[in-house]
Image 1 (cartoon, rainbow, N blue to C red):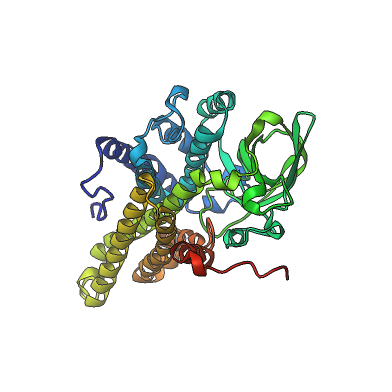
Image 2 (spheres, rainbow, N blue to C red; image 1 turned 60 degrees about the vertical axis):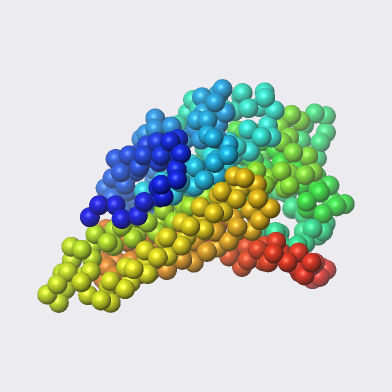
Length: 416
């Protein structure tokens, strides 16, 4: 069967169409063949051995690593008025090939935009040059901690909710102490954006700063790779900072880092939904091929009404996710007042609908759906991770309600 779901709705710009076609060639010629050639490879428990070097090298040749990097450093210049939607299109297409690889690259894109907006010209020159010179160079955004994660985004802006990771300035250096957990690209990143409390007397939104920390900095230790059930080609990591000293100029945002991090988080929600959609598209297209080729009861599966109804439901869910994703991305691009709520809605809606699409795909494949070498079970595993990536669905729903009804949103009830 030919492709059965197209992200091009007829309204894409020439730039978006060209980039989508470039990405599709990369996915079909490099990424999907790599995944299909060895279904067991993602289960290698030496994280360094999982992803073959050529996967990122070919992504680099296709220009897929340099999105968000300023043009003067060799990056791909995107039209700012449609940047979030362009990111979403490419993220979804990459995830159709493999969502773990999409995770690796999307983290780089988001952090590139953050550095583009917050880093000094000298820091940009130094790190974008290194990034562009090495196809294996990854970046990580270190916010989540063992004691507090997405629950910190409830309306609890009080000192008790502050980061456990601390930083203080002395003699021209910031010293960082703490621990970060569940960090995308955390295990093998070369550069980290680290969030730490720098003022205990105020709430998290007024007392958190962000820093640029190279991997080779003394006092930074990557302690483990978190073995996840899905998205396994992105090595999620845990990092400890023990007397980690960075120069004063490596400060990105002082005390208002979380406010400025909207540059990272807002399109980030869009790309989470987009990657999830890409998983669903892959599961749907593989299932369409299967039900048109496999015979049962004297006819091909698609001619059985029960099968046809399920396929129709899968297609409808994909179209609904894509429609909300498109609306949310365009709201972010034009900075509509409801952009944050729409981005959160897209993320939550996609996480539930795509998991259902992948469940249907597995069931329609019968016993083959559970077999490692077929690849359908992988979609279900990959989709399940998105129930809690970039905030759990419950916390995200609380954020949506807070945006819709700010006067009746929950407030901090005090320490336990």
